[in-house]
Amino acid sequence: MARKQKRKSRKNKNFFIYLQMASTAIISICIMIVVIFTANRISNLSDIDEDSLTESRENFITAVAPYAVENHKKYGIYPSITIAQAILESNWGESQLSREYNNYFGIKSFNESDQRVVLPTYEYVSGEKVKVDSAFRAYDNLSKSIEHHGILLGQADRYEKVRSASGYIEAANALYEAGYATDPRYPEKLMSIIEEYNL
Image (cartoon, rainbow, N blue to C red; front, side, top):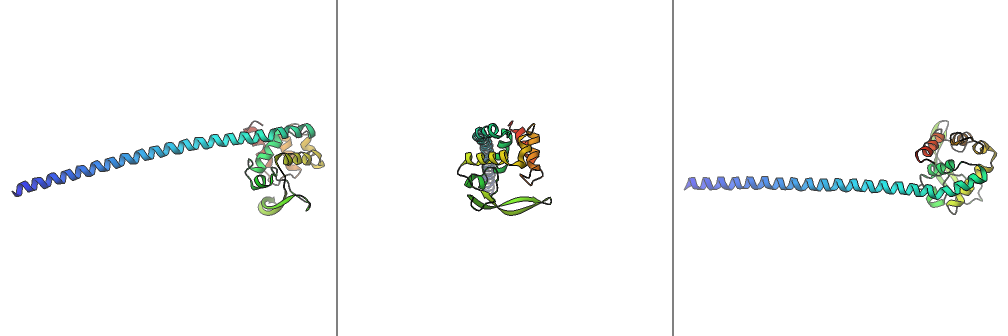
């Protein structure tokens, strides 16, 4: 009798071991399926994000281009320079200054009667990057911002070398030399944008 009970308990023990192993295998398979599914979802989402980012950047360039061409006709400013500046200064139209105040070129305000806003920004002072509060022009829309950028570069004596430049490289360097920006890498950044996006 005792032998039968031992066999029975051994069978029960073996059954529970097999059951436990089967459960572990099923759980492992389920986890693998979830991991694979999640990885595919993340991969697909990153593809969508990359596509929409490319599309939004193309849309931004398309929106700025006609006004940039108009400024070229009026003042001789290279459209590639205007578009690259709009991209760099506004971070593709995502900066607070461009989103809320339609200033796509970081144009400052030196007249209190201007439509303006004071915001923190970074400037290079004696080679050091420092945070300062500056007054910037505010515009009604993108076209007004680009129109004023054309007037500024097209009429101010200090930007004469930008207008007479023989190419975008010379124009980018002339902008920095004329004091448009304090970032010593400003010309390099503009040239990089122009070349990357075939402007």
